[in-house]
Amino acid sequence: MAQIAGQTPEGGKTQRVYLLLRDEILRGDLATGAALPGELRLAEAHGVSRVTIRRALDALAADGLIERRAGSGTTVAQPAVSQTGIAADFASLMPQLVRMGQETTARLLSFGYVAPPAGVAQALRSEARVQRAVRVRLIEGVPFSHLTTHVPEAIAQDFSESDLATLPLFRLLERSGVKVDRAEQSLSATLATPEVAEALDLAPGSALISLTRVVYDVNDQGVEHLAALYRPDRFRLEMVLNRVGDSDTRHWEPVLGPGAAVANG
Amino acid sequence: MAQIAGQTPEGGKTQRVYLLLRDEILRGDLATGAALPGELRLAEAHGVSRVTIRRALDALAADGLIERRAGSGTTVAQPAVSQTGIAADFASLMPQLVRMGQETTARLLSFGYVAPPAGVAQALRSEARVQRAVRVRLIEGVPFSHLTTHVPEAIAQDFSESDLATLPLFRLLERSGVKVDRAEQSLSATLATPEVAEALDLAPGSALISLTRVVYDVNDQGVEHLAALYRPDRFRLEMVLNRVGDSDTRHWEPVLGPGAAVANG
DNA sequence: CAAAACTGTATTACAAAAAATACATGTAGC
DNA sequence: GCTACATGTATTTTTTGTAATACAGTTTTG
Image (cartoon, rainbow over all chains, first blue to last red; front, side, top):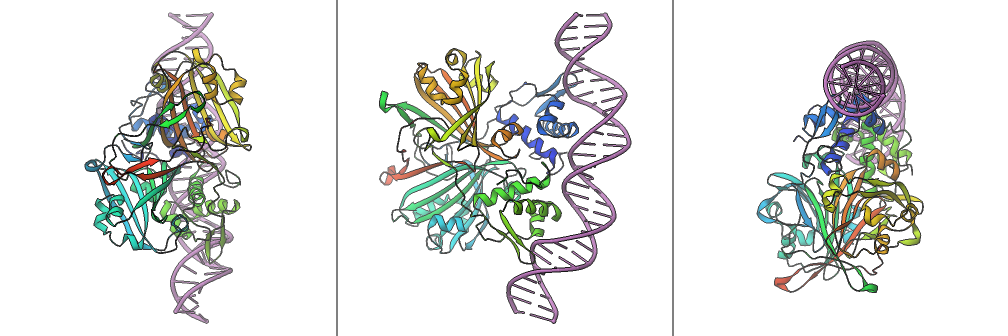
């Protein structure tokens, strides 16, 4: 399926509506065979004219996501749960891939040593120069994550560019003798900038899962700052919680994942 | 700060660029005082004309997020880390609020009994009618989450509308004698549809954190389906991981949160 | 069966936004 | 002061979105 519909004008209202509707369909909010609201209703809901809705629907139809029948209405065509993406378990460890290793590859987009951006300097508690690397991770050839890492120069000297293109940063850290102690991470959502949109092969303005992680060593020193962006249609974070304990002490507890194979998504 | 900039035309390219840039600034990717790329550069990067960039920058300036000086350039004005939002810990339990209870309120947007949408029916493994409730949760008067819950009619009969407007659904379930066993949840990102955009007081097309949760009772029967949407600027999921174990068995383990006060965000 | 009330389809003239272009002005560095 | 590059301003042209209208296929209903 084309990421950006063939006939959709770049970045106008039409595409905004198109992205929104596509998001709803692929997410499964609208089940297969379910009828969409009429064009008039959609137009009113989105605050655009009917012609614009129509153009967006044209694009969706071209993608094969919907089927339109005059008089009858527009229905969702695609099997709603096309979740062919990767599932990651975030209860146990890092948001690591369930099946990592052979099946994913990385592409190094950018590499160099820079003064740390404010956010990174603050997180690492240091103004020292850092190694900055931007990578895209692919599964079976299709990109699903955009990773920007900052590592203090002193540590990162051991990494070559080819190292970064092949090995997860995590292994590189341990190889350098870093004694990792803990990590803090934060999860959010953000919009795809043109740059990452191109790297991840999607339209600018698409929604992305955003994960920021700071890893500290046993000396409480920041050794890695990661800003990861994931395509929500190809990557999801899943967890199972158990309700444990007796009456007073009842609470939720995450079910720890199976393996302990550590890798970076 | 106005969510939708005063002068931004509704939903055109200008607003798309505006939202994108604002996202970058508020996220802290661009530190306070840092210089933005020139208008020309931005125009090229975003694939729009300079006039459009200019309009977006006008809106950002009107919001007080940037400062522009002729000849010199445009810089970020806002203290980058304006993270006044709510932090939730998702390692230990539900993505519950750290400080819940008094400080948050709920508004019931919609309530009724319906046939379950496909996704819900599949998750709950039942085609029986369900109670559907849509709520917005606010902290100190500002909305930060949009919650859509589906509960089997048999269980939900005990809930009144006013119950839903005041109590977390979780308490209501337990009050009804449901023996909760486990929950499965999945985290993603999505775009704000016009409907939720209005409820959360933001622009359609903004990025949202999306959490889907299915709760099962001891009989392995689905008792609640929750689709939650969070404003990323007012809500973040955070966790701390510890590196534990010896050589071979080294792995990450989530640090469990302090309390066990259960509540729904 | 036929009318009514929905749906999508198509074409038009028109308004608004964006693009392209040119030029003026301000600032910093050499 | 010259130069390079930044924002500021104005005008014209092109693209995109809007509004209105007429038409055609489906379903519902009396």
